[in-house]
Length: 395
Image (cartoon, rainbow, N blue to C red; front, side, top):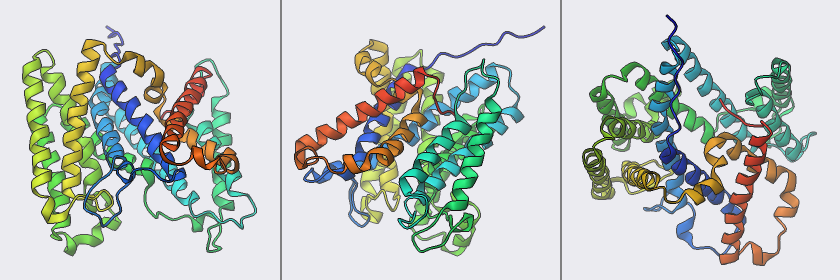
């Protein structure tokens, strides 16, 4: 007997949190164009003990990646997909994120003296991403040819790539760092694999979460210096910070799903977990400070604690159906998140001369902040229009 294919509806609370976080990610990524704004809005310098508003956005997004993993994997299992198929999807998704992340980072080192202007190189790069990883309409039969063209463009761009020091070609590309997308890829890989193989073993997943956080603590106490060379081959060994955000997100989902019919139980459990993490982060601050750049344990624990509270607020808003007008305004940031992340790169590449020469009054102080908030709305609106035309990135 053939089992019917079942699908799980989208969890609006996660979508609301994802869309809002993406909105502010676009905003904080645009404040480099501004002057005369409060320092607490931007990133805190590496050696300063503290964090600004911008320093919490990426951790929340990683936490949301973790929130989504149990739902995504359970949905695939409900459709009858085998573990090997899911494993293949996880690995493929990770590779795509790493490729995009590393290439976007290398674009920052692109030479102004290159034959192909940097703006054109970047535009073609984003176009190749869309051609390769676009969600094509099911009725479209020539999908493979478009993907092949995308791959050819991507390979061609690596061949003509020229670094600022004059090095050219594929050999000039380096892993300076993994980029935002690459870091998401590593966190996703670690936690998706752990959930896939331990999905029925919540205690083991919780132990794994503690071990990842312990790994970061040991890193900052210099207890791993003797095996530091391993980080060249196993990235996670470096400090475990990225995966920590994701795994605690998945644990939050597991707890919520298990006790969602008992509001008091899941609310007290998650509130207690958040308070423990927040308090631990504050109390251990004298040991290593709060620093996003150095990924200190205090920064990680405080950000996870805040993320859990934000999730609970999103659940409450979903249950009460409050804030839905706000969600409808920014919905494409939840349903086409990767597209939304890529559009600013195209925008800057196409309109940089105009955008960077706006009147000072529009790039300074309060009006500057309003400009960047409107920029976020504009990017999300463009994303929504592209989604309607079936131009959506998904890996």
